[in-house]
Amino acid sequence: MRKRKNTGLSPGHLVYTGEQKVDPSTIRQVYYNESEISESMDFKKDPLHISDSFKLWTEVYGIHDVKLIQKIGLKNEMHSLVMEDIVDITNRVKIEVYDEGIFCIIQLLKLDELKKHIKSEQISIFFNDNNLISFQQDPDDSLATVRKRMYSEGSRIRSRKCDYLFFALLDYIVDCYFLITDTIDDEINKIEERLHRGLDHELIVDIYSVRTKLIKFRNFTYPLREEINRIKKTDSRFIHDETLIFIRDLEDHLIKIIEISDNQRELLNGIKDVIFSQSSLKLNQDIKWLTVISTISVPIVILTGIYGMNFENMPEIHWKYGYLSWWIVTATIIFSLIIFFRRKKLF
Image 1 (cartoon, rainbow, N blue to C red):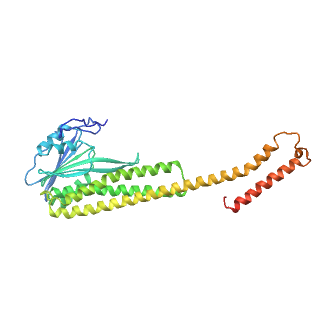
Image 2: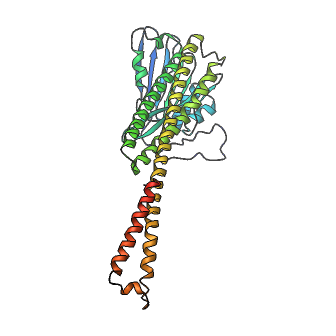
């Protein structure tokens, strides 16, 4: 059950706002420099201090253990507002510069194949020159791809300061956004194919499902673009010039993702317009048919009503060919109206 942040608490008070969990948080520490790399799992929940010759990446899996987060934060001289934001999963995407380091909150997006919706995981990152700490909302090893790259010979991550590792993490997360756009593209293509076969209720449901994904996707990508643009202009000593080049490239990738997302939204709006037009056209056709049937029925109903009044002095009732005459008149009226409507191209 998700816990709501209590009102009236002082700023910097740590309250975990996600679903309560009983599993313990775990820590992985990766020590590295240009020539060496090693890692260890610390189940005692006591992050080690770093030596001057190594850089350290500390990965924390699970942010529900508020005491652990506070302990790590105090050891690394984090601002109390940073620790508060780490355990609050309702935060928007942001990058903030502090004297002790740079703090970032970003959403890692994954597609839930079973439920067919976008699942987001909050990733919080705090770093300075030689120390980077990542806090993952879920216990799974979501950032393993970046860590595996570090074991490659000549890895640029190991030869640079932690700002490049920060970039590498953002770059991986943005690459995951491309996978989301590809999946949404496939869904829109399938919707277009089904649209050619005709309208159905499930098609409308699927359109609004894709629309919901695009809105959620937009809520994460636009703020991230703004924050990256802002960090690009910062004069923080923790962002080095050689890393800024890569951050600019990351911004270009994000702009491309936003453009793809905007195009997908326009395409989806176009599909909705086609559906509404088809529905209106079908409704108009139905109304035309009802109008034709009603118009043809009116004179028949009138004739039937007249000769159904059972007055005695109605000469046509006693005619030998009265019944046949009624059918001839009725058929003439029907065929005359049909010819009239055909010439007017009503059907």
